[in-house]
Image (cartoon, rainbow, N blue to C red; front, side, top):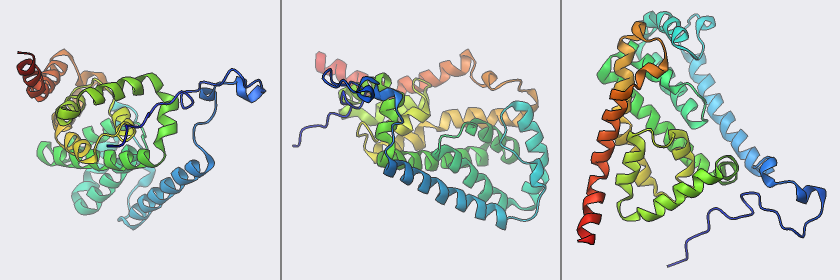
Length: 272
């Protein structure tokens, strides 16, 4: 078996040789832009392809008051967006769902903040069952796109942004290779690590894609249900923070604990 790669080398984390006395050598690599020219070109190319596809979808959609449409950044923005889109969604359901999915996947792929508002919007416009299906599908598709994009160009970026967190994640993954799906389910169900970090870091630490995909598809269901259900009563929400109170977090961690229970029982049996 080939030796495992040293995924987080000192030079990637900005350690500079003492013998380098040049002005550029004295600066930490953490102060430099992490992507090379070809990596930057690839990332811009992928972004342009996705953007062009998204633009084509919107151009071919039936006419609407697009001046009233914008990505929500607060609950009040979301209420206005929901009011503007309600009639359109009823008149053109297929076109609206296509546009909604394209926007959600685009945001998830390129780490654009605001997908939680899109999940709330799904609950407000589609109801619980259809809303959960849409959110889980789009979140999984977007996370998958982000996974492969990170596999292509993400290593220098993530070692630049989160070197310590990446070391920790790599060590935890290494200790749980035999029950990796359970551990990834726990991470997806609970807010232990941000989903953005999991999407970017998983290919860097060699999480198999099938494990990543299954953990994402199944593990996002509880949080999606909570968010979509909250969208039904969007008028009562004051802040996104209201979604995850102590009771909600306790339920998520309980479900997460159940997901890693087989691993705990196996270790206990081995020790005995």
